[in-house]
Image (spheres, rainbow, N blue to C red):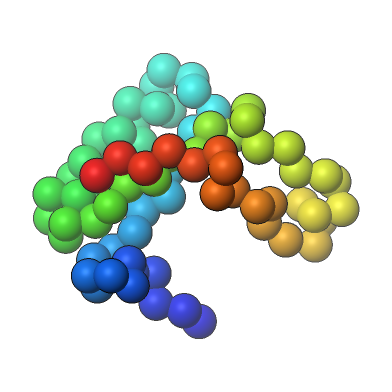
Length: 74
């Protein structure tokens, strides 16, 4: 298993997958901000509505290519 840290500085990387429902997004925001404060983690938001995943990829557990759709917030 790979270490979920940023290779540049060793800080944790947190991916926040959101469906943009207000309650879910605010929970993720609070969790992400707390992790950032406690560990210096970098936060990366992914809007699930912008990421198209074919059924076969979901069934096989193969993640989509996310880089064009990612939004980094530190």
